[in-house]
Structure formats: structure tokens, C-alpha cells
Amino acid sequence: MATTNPLQFIQQVRSEVAKVVWPTKREVMLTTVMVFILAALTAVFFAIVDILIRGGLQQILGMFG
Image 1 (cartoon, helix red, strand yellow):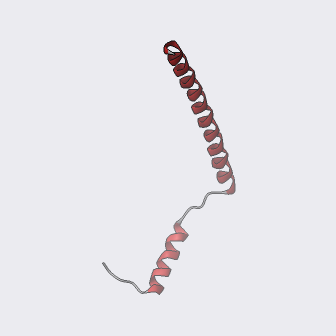
Image 2: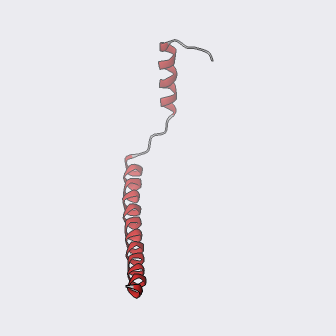
Image 3: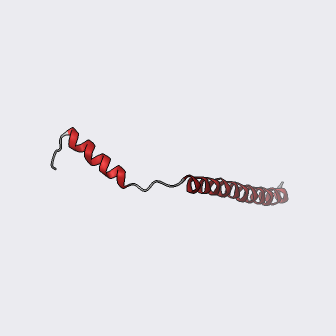
């Protein structure tokens, strides 16, 4: 592996960072809102599944106890 001196390394890092396409403020806000909405929907889904499983188990165990 070729070694580079620290100055060359910093120059290479700066040139690579310059190539990065940063998201706009609007894109960041939209994706953040989407993450919160999907997290809320996932929480509701698993809460409903939990309630259904708990109810089913209580009925099954109620038949034997």
C-alpha cells in the first residue's frame, strides 16, 4: 500500500468531501417527518398485534384454568 504524507492526505480528504452532495433543508425535514410517521405506524401495528396475542392467550389459558 502506498503511503502519503499528512498534507497530501488532507488534500485528498478535502477533494473527496467537495464531491459530496449534501441534502437540502427541505429534504432533511421531509425525511425526518417520514421517519417519525413510520415509527409511529410501526408502534401502533405492534401494539395491536400485542393486544391480539394477549387476548388469544388469555382465552386459551382460560379454557384450561
